Amino acid sequence: MDDITPQDLKSRIEGSESLNILDVRETWEHEEKNIGGENVPLGTLPHRLGEIDHWKEEELIVYCRTGNRSGNAKKFLEQQGFTKVRNLLEGIEGYLKQ
Image (cartoon, rainbow, N blue to C red; front, side, top):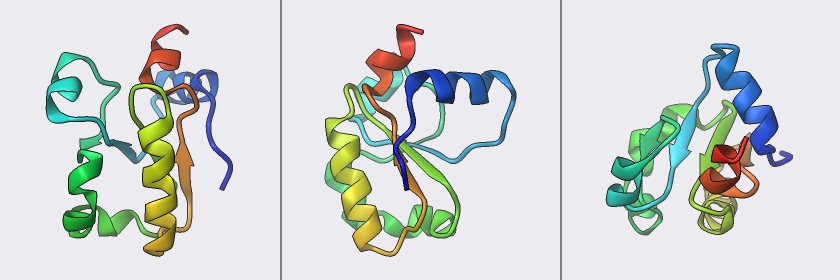
């Protein structure tokens, strides 16, 4: 599935759309600033798939600081059978510039 731009995500959040969002940054990063969603650090993702398994067939937006870790998470999740994963391009940094 195609990735999502910061502009598109911001528009959807401001429209009060119900979204499945996964933050793969470290917990301390999530606590500093976030755009919501579940926080499962990339390093723990393989061991915590059961926590997000209910999103396997739903659109899942994954983000990190700049889009690199979430890009890796997207690839991993697709290998695990997640069918609609979208990486937030430019990560939270790009989102906060909007």
